[in-house]
Image 1 (spheres, rainbow, N blue to C red):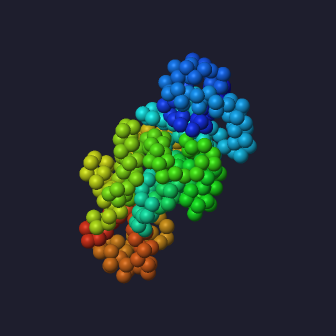
Image 2: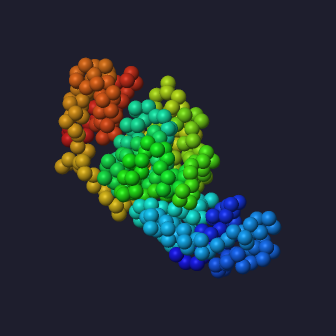
Image 3: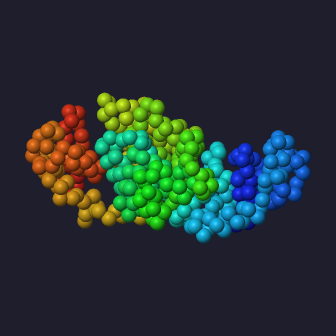
Length: 371
């Protein structure tokens, strides 16, 4: 780290010093030891009030900043400032990027093709399945999945990416060494080992209500686009979607039941212009370069390049005819439970083997193997 970065770090640990002050400090021609400056000089350099300038003069310490960095490095925690060439280019483009990023894990993921998957903290079984399936399919193609490691859809997105042998980035509303929610401890450990954890809040900082809306701009800022799986009409996911639009990112949404309040927000996004998404191809069609230069092969493909099916999926596919078959009829023709059949049918839709019709009913899709 260079001296200017230590300067920014020292400032960031002073109460009442926010991103505006840090941005002004970063734009200075050289690093400044504010503890040796007069209040008037600090006011001129950072455009702060006399009271804040005095606080900076009294509390600024480059020595403490160096000590913090050494302690964090020993714990496996790194940091990036906007002065660093390793700071993610996509995030630098947004209107209000964080001046300091704390990280644990593989920081090279900050420069890989990435896509955000977000949604409600209280999803339906349908929402969980879709989130995990979408994340897995994208991860298998070399796309890094970004989410917030919250309960519900976020956690399923991370798990899907890891299950697909891919990478994932978790953006936290607390310090990178704090696990929140606590039940995601095992998931957090796996992301540390196989992915990346990111936060703009210093290590040890406990989660606070106001931190989560702020961290949402980083989730969308690190991503080429954002997929909303399930969101109620007053969901925090809609905040992220709005931020994504402000940042010039595309928004995609998974449709759900018209009777489900958990999909009301998703449907509203679609009405406002978000792309209705049924398979990952709906996403990839918008980004021909998203998987360019990365792993385009999918481990679970057959000799014809189509997604291979599990034995259970083969059974369900055989029960679905070339004419519409009701869900109840498929249930009668197979020995699976209703919840598991629902999962298998969804998987077959993602693999573009069947489509769902009103009713609900299902029908097979003719592909080149059937010609």
